[in-house]
Image (cartoon, rainbow, N blue to C red; front, side, top):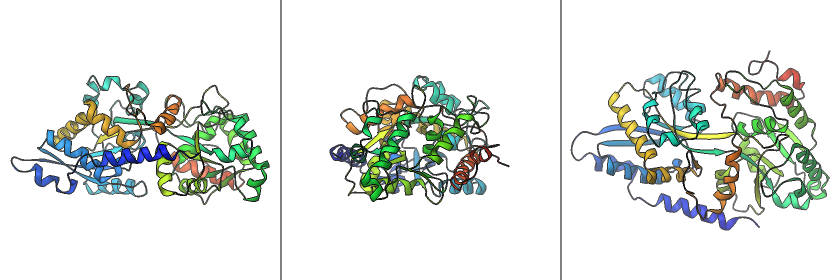
Length: 431
């Protein structure tokens, strides 16, 4: 049975969170500027859960403004389609925002690499900062020693299967329903079972799609390939790329040869997700808890049970691609604005009440040990099983933007029939 009751609870939580405050973020400046001088800040945020919702963000900011009436924050909401371009253009124009909410792959490996960011080392000296998990801390630090991110939440991306179809095809025997894991050998058997299932053949249902039109959702295809035979994307020190390895070559060849798995150079991750929700594929390689909530909204006729899974692996445990999100400060040259921006970050991360609210707005998990902030939330409890599987956060390796482009181009070449061993040579700078 589809987890409708769980999702309704999640949607109600979002609505309650959004309605906690009544201030309109567009008129806050009138209320905050009665006397004295304000420090005017701009916050640009990518759509990370409910941080893309003006009502929710406005409510959180209203509480901040009550405590710090001399700091006014206006917000611009970015999309992942155009957000990077807007940031880059703002930097060229000398009109960067003060605060940004995103992850280390942008704040450290891209904008930090460009020397646009403020070092937040002083924020990491607090007691609360000392409780942040070590692997999260390391991901927020540039190799020059500066910290360009102060994190608020984390998640481990996963994949999903159509539980009903797997049951009909007698493929549930190949997954561990308790741990949501499976081996590479069982993944191969499951794909074969789906291919042999008459209804799937009659309705042209693919087992799965390797989407490779652009870099969107590439965390899924990277994790799939790396897990199958224990490969990696970079070295442990995050100094070079290790795509050209025996393990990765073997995994890429397997996916190309496996009947039921197709490479689609014209498909984005969004296309693959849509096909999965329309029951045109049996599994989806780009998934997480927010995705399930959002796709249930996008597809009100979704009538099968979505069962989240770790990627199949030949190792003892899977290593899932992790996501980390937090605040960074652009170096605008104004010490007053930088100081005020740090005050905002401290407020949001050092006080348990606003911090819990900030994390819940993302629909992800805290970056330090806390009591369960999703008590009685069955969907979040289900997906929390994946957080211990979060692998190395390597998205801060030099030339990361170049590597992301090279990855989808590599998948496209292999899908077009190019030799795997030749295609991966000198990644991310193939000959």
